[in-house]
Structures are given as structure tokens and as C-alpha cells.
Length: 361
Image (cartoon, rainbow, N blue to C red; front, side):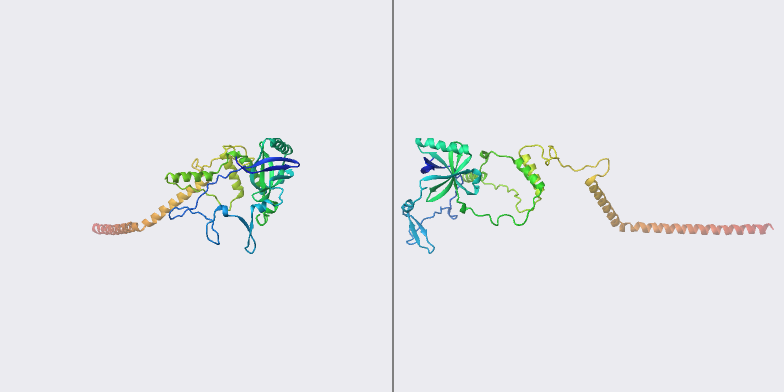
């Protein structure tokens, strides 16, 4: 790896020549700006405001802009003459426990490599001293025109240095915390702990940038002329008011399922699998639960339909009622005629009997 800075670690009266090497690299995909009309590349040229001419990099220097807009030129020679003891030295000022370093202060990371054979012995001495003490070294160094703060620690068999922000560069988190008093119940904390235990640990080496891979596949597909299909967007559920307990329980179940674990029940409810939900079936002709209510509603609706149909068909049967009444009237007339006949026949018989008596006399 190419070194970006050469100097020495000042460890009391011990000086350790070292090289500074970048410990990280950026894998982000960078895009160019183009003119949408013709696809031409858009470039930014450095132009002097006075003569409006483009200026080459070798003709560009540094200057400090004063409050009134005045430019005060500052050269590299000016900076090199400053009485800065850390210009070429990483000066260790203290050794502290690692937990005293606020992660918010951490910036870029570097590897420190021993520069030459004579540096191997003091380099190893500092490395082993850091290992045995379980501490980190706080140091000051100068890089790219300014003095910086750093933290030295051991990574495998190498001394690594993390650039640190100065304490006054860390902003106070004012107005960031939720406003008002928020109460968290013990049951919610227990479920949060269960979710943390279920998710467990992760092999950091297995983590990778899914978005970068998707962008690379997109570029490859477009380069080969393939049609790019839009990805299905998942429901992130942002902005929804949720039941925190239900969300935590579902998260625990999902975490266990994703890890292939059995025992999706809540904590303290055994290790059985999640029960499947099935509709309740009717047995022995007796209604049970919601199924009986549904059947009763269906039969009631059917009865209402048949009643409505019967009401509609009632006007059509008026003729039958009329014929029935006519039949009843004719039957009544016949009955009256028979009565009249029977009564007239009786009076005739009585007259014949009286005439027979008169004749015999």
C-alpha cells in the first residue's frame, strides 16, 4: 500500500519512524454529469474572476478571505515555517481506556507501518505495551495543513490510528431528543430484550453494500442493452402509528423464522411452533361460533327473499279468489233451490192425503 505521510511516533524519548497508510477505501460508484440533450460530458473549469481565463493547477495557490472580501495569500513555505512540533511527528500525549473516546469523534482510519529495520524494535514495544495495558494512545499530529487529534490502538499485529475530531467540533444534541415525558413499560423492554437476543450477533465480514451491487447490475444491464425491470417496492411502514407491543412480538417471530428457529411463541409460553389459524367447522348439526351466525344470517336472508316473492305473486292469484267466491255463490243457490223443492213437495203430499180422506167419506 502506498504511504501518504512519512514521520515518526514520539513515545517519550523514543522515536519510531513510521509511514502512514490509508486503512480504508471508498467503493462508492461515482457518476459524471452529462448534457441530457446530446450526452456530452459536463466539466467544471477553474476560471479566474479577473481575466475570465482558465487557470492550470500549477498556477493555483491558497489564500484566506478576510471579512471584507480581501484575499490574503498563504504559501506552503509560510505554513512550513510555523513552529509546529507535530509537523512530522505523531506526538503521544496520554494513554486512556478505550471507552473514554467518544465514537462521535472518530474520523478517518490509518495504518502505521514501521519505516525501516531500526524502527521494528520500538514499534513492537509500543504495540505490545498497548496490548497489555488494554488502553489506547491519544496523540497529536499534523496532516494536510492542519494539526489533528488521533487515537492509536492495536489491530492484529499492526498499530492503527483513528483521526479524531477536536472536542469543540462535536455539536451538542440540543432539541434532538423526543419532547415530553415518554413512559416505557417493563413488558415493552422485555420484548425489546427478547428481540435483541433473537437477532443476536453478526459476522461483520458477511455484511455488504446491497445498493452498490444493485447499481452495478443496473449499469451492466444498460451497457448490454437489456431492459431494466423496476424493482418491487416494499412497504416500509413509515409514518404509521403502530401498536408497539404487537410490533415487537411480530419482530421477534420474524427474527426467529428468518434464523430457522422453532419456538415462535412469546417468552415464557413454551417452545412450540406458531399455531395455524383455521376457520371453525360445524359439528353434529349444531351451530358453533361465527360459522353458525353466518348460516343463520344466510337462512334468514333466504326466508326474506321467499316472502318477498310470495308477496309479489299475490296480485296474480286474484282471479282464483274470484272463481272461488263464484263457486260458493252457485253452491248456495243450489242449496236454496233444494230447500224450496223439499218444502213444496211436502205441502203437495199433505193436500193429496186430505183429498183422499174426503173421497172415502
